[in-house]
Image (cartoon, rainbow, N blue to C red):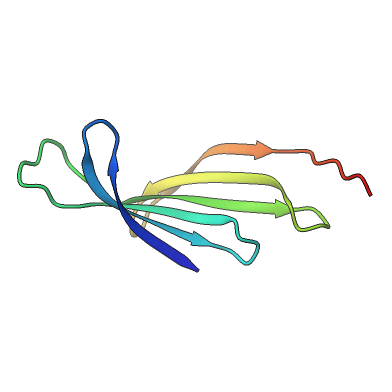
Length: 91
């Protein structure tokens, strides 16, 4: 499932479209940012994305997430963060 919405980015109020794609667990697997054209171009704008890969425990909760970032559409994508979490369950 994908959801797209327009938003303003940061203090500069640059407008962009943010698109989020979710997996079957409801976790974001890609966040894509598409800058909108502006009348005065102060810097080079690129479409880019952050992609997420997950490892899940036997209860379907993610315990490891790797984040990669890159330019769209073809990348290359580079790992930029690796998160692990330990969950305790009380039955």
